[in-house]
Amino acid sequence: MIYDALYTILSVDTEVTDLVSTRIYPDQAPQKAIAPYVVFQLISGDHLESHQGGSQLVFRRFQFDGWAGTRLLAEQIREAIRLSLQGFSQSSPVFGTVIQAILADSEGSGYDDETELFRARSDYFIHHEVP
Image (cartoon, rainbow, N blue to C red; front, side, top):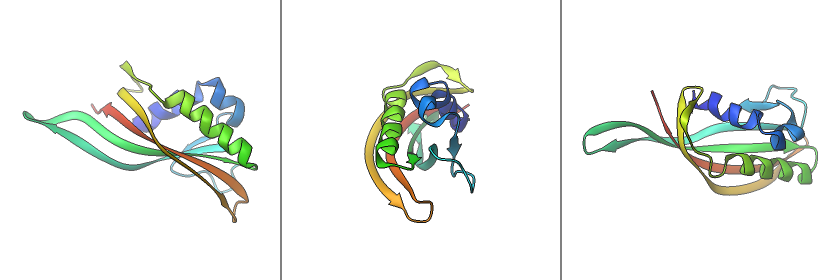
């Protein structure tokens, strides 16, 4: 459900969709995906405990990659993702998921020889509730 929520947040943001349309993929892009596009994936996560035992709060780290034919466009995608996600919180569920906070972490960039595309990476800590 968190994947659906993250897709929704990005796909309704015109700053993102003006650059990649709806080419936003969880885990991996299709083999012959048309650039530019976004791929996001879960890196790590913890279910938080309280003194009363288990809670519904999860703390996860997601990586978002903007892929494009130029470094500039890849970086523009990363910035659009940042503007869409950083500081996001909503008490009403997005696809059944209550997101308490999205916090920016690290960034990076690179080039993939196989796809001949530039990648601009950004990581986010996402605090959300699970049903």
